[in-house]
Image 1 (cartoon, rainbow, N blue to C red):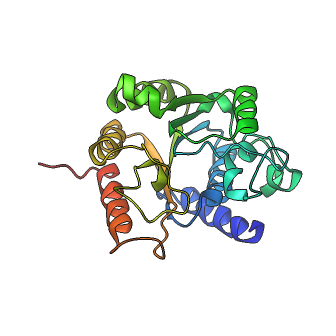
Image 2 (cartoon, rainbow, N blue to C red):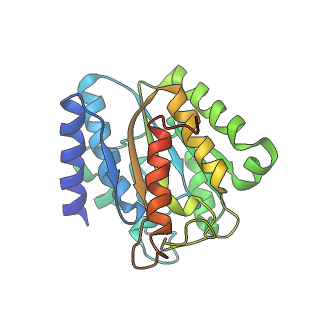
Length: 233
């Protein structure tokens, strides 16, 4: 896994160094260990700050000491912020890659008990599905973008398809009921596109084995199009 992450980090770093936009599409969210490392390395060279908008049903902020499953795909965000096993935290030669104050989680609704303590310790901005129910997705993403535009130079969007309700996108490894609906997901990405401030994007958790007639894959492709500026009219 670290070997693959190393390759991904190097590719992402080079794409950014060359002045291009990295779009990463992959399996589980452990891929973020590589993408965030590559972005962080590029931003360090350019003396830029960067932030991550993490759209997911899960916080992915477990460590080897708190995880009930042992799955690394539940650890990349914590590791990127300097919390966890040394091999993950020190990956790519430096730590932390991401400052917690430059991280915002959106759509969270499945968090392990001990993982909650990691979240409280690092204290990133968090908008759970309950918050979205109360505030509305447009208000949530507008607040996050307003915050980030003031404090970071590079905005990375990390979109896990399981942030969406499994009735809409069933082809994910860890489905959780009660996620974003179709229009909430598209409005979120459309608002990011309108901001014109996204510098990199990854889409995780697309599993063709679990998908139904490519429903999730097609939906993910449509979301990418929305994030790049596609509109109804």
